Amino acid sequence: MNQPAPSPIAHRYCIGLMSGTSLDGVDGVLVDFAEGTQVLWHASRGFDAALRAELLALNTPEGRDELHRAALAANALARSYAEVVRELLQATGLAPAQIAAIGAHGQTVRHRPQMFDGTGYTLQLNSPALLAELSGVAVVADLRSRDVAAGGQGAPLVPAFHQGVFGRPGETVLVLNIGGIANLSVLAGDGTVLGFDCGPGNALMDGWCQTHTGQPYDDGGQWAATGQVLPALLDRLLAEPFLQQPPPKSTGRDLFHADWLAGHLSASATSAADARPADVQATLTEFTARACASAVQRFGRGGGELLVCGGGAFNTQLMQRIAALLPGVAVDTTAARGLPPQQVEAAAFAWLARQALLGLPGNLPAVTGARGPRILGAIHPA
Image (tube, rainbow, N blue to C red):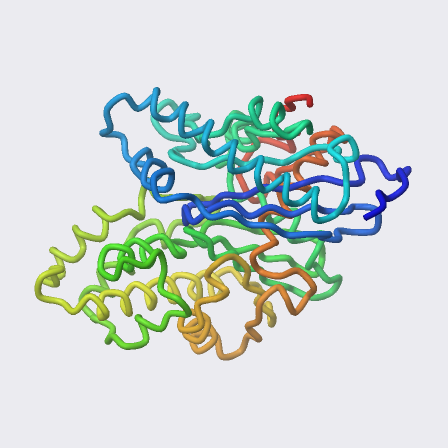
């Protein structure tokens, strides 16, 4: 394939890489910003079992040699990222020198903003210097900590991108990203944006499915569809205080993890031993659907359209439940607006990388709670 001629558009081509709390692997996109946001190619790479297990273990603070293991896991992650970058470049015929930057989010293993000392922290495993070395492309990483330093949550960062791609003057559009954690963007017709994490996405469902079926996720929600919702357990899950907190707010596996679920199973007199695993899966699916629908009902500002992205968009059972709980809202995936669900978040981090190169803010203080707009990310030259 012939290489495209250089463009006068500043930082025209950027790559975005995302590995989210679902821990299923890396999604990458190569984006052309010459005219809006055009994804030229999408590539994905699943984590091998050993890396996935290590990343999951590093989400909990009781491990041995944690710093050593985290450093090596970050190197392994950077090598996975580099493979995705290599595939994107080969598929599009672009050379590393033509790519302005890679936005590499890294893998979140702790997210505790505004806690402990008032500032808190967010920690993503990454080795951006190694990725720059392997790819020959500048890397923009550490995209959340500047917002946290300014008093913000450091998350979610995608609403500003959602506004640029999906916002419509005079209409309120809602965008629901269902990764390991779910977050909602409310794109008002007057240009104002609200965004926040609204609760668990796939993390609890995937973990339960892995434990009881050996599969990393419930394909299409088919297993959940065979179960019955357990009312006592569902009531306890829905009583989680985080769900009632007003935005700005963000969360992660620090809250929604296997031990959290086990505690609720025990407290609801529904132990893993006396409940059918499929019934627990059905309940977790209903919990996720209700948490998302409740956020739309409370903060959706009359939005009539809900666009869903992330891995949860492929869970048919979950999508049907969300639609049933929101009868006045048209629920569809972002593919209806030209950007497939599995590409949205990676494209957002390509956009954030470009914002950093242009010296422009990447956060929305109304979303994260930061004291003001901030340029996000640290740049590692090629």
